[in-house]
Image (cartoon, rainbow, N blue to C red; front, top):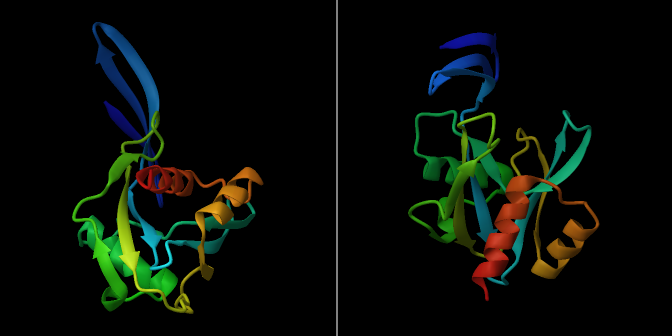
Length: 172
């Protein structure tokens, strides 16, 4: 049994399920899921966007990503987000994986929402987010620069950490 207790940007449910005669009770957060991009330019640098996140009260550096909130494929979501967040058009994309290189639960123990990460190679060019988007800046960083940003806790976003380590590991 699921009882809706909050209906907003996310939905929150109190859930009761039978587990071999024992009733398990827990809270479930229904997330829409999202698609993100490990975006690499011709110099081998990774795109990160700077955004203000009001929940945590400061700017973050993250990979480009977007919520699965439209009636288009998860791959088309990240292609659309590249244009909005980075000014990267379909014509600028050299290649993109047909399927995500990884899909994982955004909040493992509380939600069934999935994050889908695609590996995307793009032409090197000056990038600029669209004015109406919440991205303040997009910049391409070397892996050494990203490593330093992680070690100094400038980058703490989970999807960005996963993307960085997946890409770095793929180069071995």
